[in-house]
Image 1 (cartoon, rainbow, N blue to C red):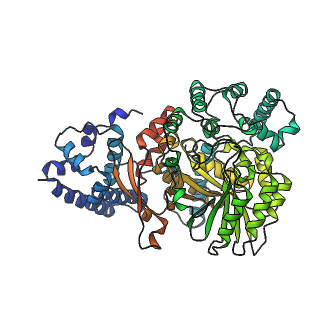
Image 2 (cartoon, rainbow, N blue to C red):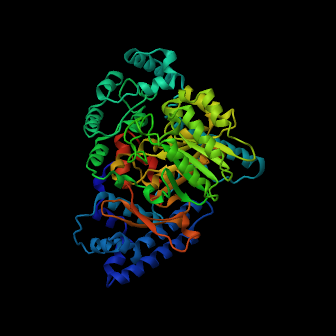
Length: 594
């Protein structure tokens, strides 16, 4: 795609009615009122002229009009420190605004076109589904043929993303295991021992390069990461998931653990790591090892490390290193934290996380679970762990049995929360680990982070479909946190909304049922399906959208604050997709999700 087309002149050329208003208004305040009136008039005209098949078309006009009116509000201008209205006034009167970028003009252009009903308005589901004039069985069969065609297209798109359970992938990983074992020194039996996996975590660049081919940029970033002593490590199992040849198939795998240079530079420049605490956990920790944001649940963090570090981890500011010595808090501190939970009977659910608590030994885990289970008000224990992906051999029959013994139907539920990021991460070992839990009545839920590497059309849908087949329930899809150091991973909020409404909803209910959320710092989850919890405030000169998020406490508290954040410019995201070989036309409706 050519971003250079998005200019002030192009904006004016495609919106003659709006710029006629701009040139005729006597001042900017008169223009504000006229533009608001204009949005209502074009919506009313569209309603009067629309046919019975135009519901989605009308919804787009309505949504764009509402969003544009939000941008015109004085309160939005004050919050943004920038005025869309002033920018339009200056453009209409040929006043130079050199700070306005193609990404700004592109987003504003599509908003104005959508508001006037000029935009492309075909979502994926309307490509094949059309009005059926017949009735009865004839109508049902016509509709059924359309649904067949639609699903064929969905299936084709999902099949573009290989599963780690595919025969070729299994064979490929088997070869990778043999190579890693030959270099590290080990047997197939040792490979299946989680303690061997931990002992042989790859921590240095020299060893890593013997085991997998790296690109020049990956090598340079890792070298810089080690120089700045950033936490880094990969389990042999997870390393076996990377392909021998460089390509896009394992891009999501590599992105999880190989930091880009942009990340390394941002982290290296930080003097006080507590500023990386994006969620403000220090402000929601009433007691050592405990985090509490909601009335009936708290987090217990007994173990502050993992078998490997995800680059964009929410708690990377707390973790010193992979399997760092001293990561275990010690039973004295843990006992004190559990006693604090005991003394707060409003808490009915405890999420044991960290770090990864399943990287602890069985004895320590058993002691912690036993003490939490003794709290009479706790009716649910959740364990947050990624070991089913990074080190699935950790989930032994004895570990599953240890956890399962605290399940007491009608009295206490035990559940496991995991993070599978991509279909290519799933292996037969992962499937077996999940099955060990499920056979004991322990449900497993997935929390997907919607990064760039999981955001192509139907990529996340393919993951949810596979997860259900191996026994994992989709639970949350998290918008990637707006941290400067993780810019390479971020996607526009509009893309996640588009994915949820155009792709996820085409799956059967059990496969699509998760919740898209934005984590509001110091406050908690804001459900993206609910427009009442956010305001679209502005499009900034660099093309990023500015949002104001409301706390979940909005309706249960007399006094709550809001959080204002900038998003990734949509044009930049589409340009990146284009560079990676994606057809940008497949994403054309992204502009109309706010």
